[in-house]
Length: 217
Length: 74
Image 1 (cartoon, rainbow over the protein chains, first blue to last red):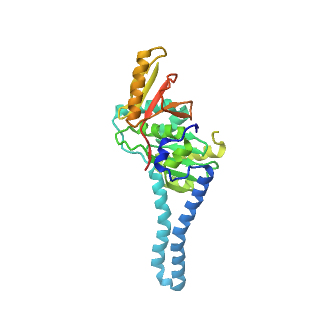
Image 2: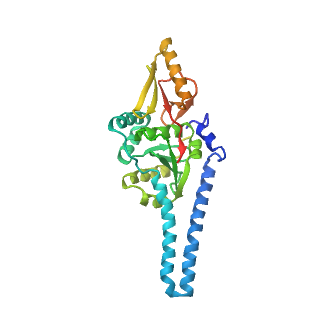
Image 3: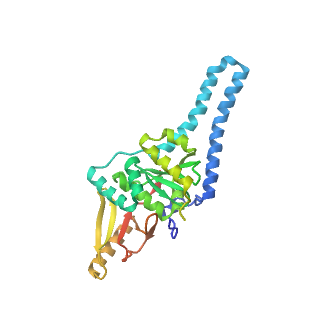
């Protein structure tokens, strides 16, 4: 991808360090540690209560429920970035779809038709671009990042929303990842469960691509 | 024929078309281009699959120049 000029939108988030592969790995590790920090106290307290008084098990079960629910809620938040939004009228959608189709290759068009997401290989990994966000599967396919990023124009057709994000991504991939807000990072399997069934094959394809192909240089 | 298009609620709108040597059409296209940039649009040219370049002057040799709105973290 071209890195000649930074994405102008990065000026609005000037305090953020520019995304790099190493910084993404660090953010992923931090995200996991934070999730563990949210979960372990509930599990530990449940165990301690049960050891002190077995009859306290209902409280322990409630605590374990919290320990399970918190990571699930984060995963759900991540899945929401690729959830389809309300469609515009048919005619604008068709026009926008034509432009989007011109921007991508046959395989990407086919995946978009099936899942609503457009795959794009970058230097940071394999992206899946949706209407209101994007997923990034770095090389190896063991983690996925969910980015909340969109065009704040409510009347744009769905395919135009994707085209906006795709063009911004192609202009400056690192800038795109800097502007976007991280909604979730974790194992693809955790996200997949929470994704709309229609979109799941796109994640499977991105994970597969990230395992077998090197990033675009 | 080169085109300047803007992604909008209609899908996209063609704002200008020009051909090399057509000074009048080029002048109109440059004026439209400046007007849209002043209105807050960003202009891009695609450079093959996976590549795009932002431009601040109308590239007269490009086949297609696309105007997009700014994006923002949600």
